[in-house]
Amino acid sequence: MAELLTQPTDEDPRAFIETVPHPTRRADALVLLDLMGRVTGEPAVMWGSSMIGFGRYHYRYASGREGDALSVGFSPRTTAQALYGLLAAPGVEDLLPHLGRHRRGAGCLYVTSLAGVDLAVLEDLVRRGHDFMTTENFT
Image (cartoon, one colour):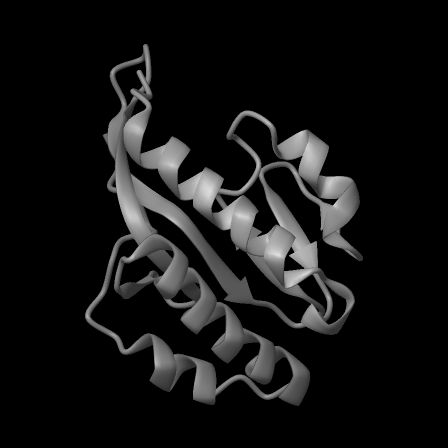
């Protein structure tokens, strides 16, 4: 089996954020770094070259493929912050209408600016996502 490309690295997440060219994305990434670290109690870890994760879980598919992935995290993209691990937990569908301005992707949320988001709702999504991803058995 091929090795997964997105692996944890020893790179410093804060140093990575400082290289983000867009000032809003950079400032919002620093807020997310602190918020996700505080809510999860996990240290920030770079996964690959552009994802910052908090916690990890192990998965195993019926095909036999298995690996580790970040529990929750984000990536400051060119047009928005991509937020990972926040959509799988029970009850999140009820929270999303209260989050504020966001878009949904296949497995993530996209937020253009945290100024348009209710941070208390975001914290709840992070907490639920982290708890779900680290306590459920993904087989």
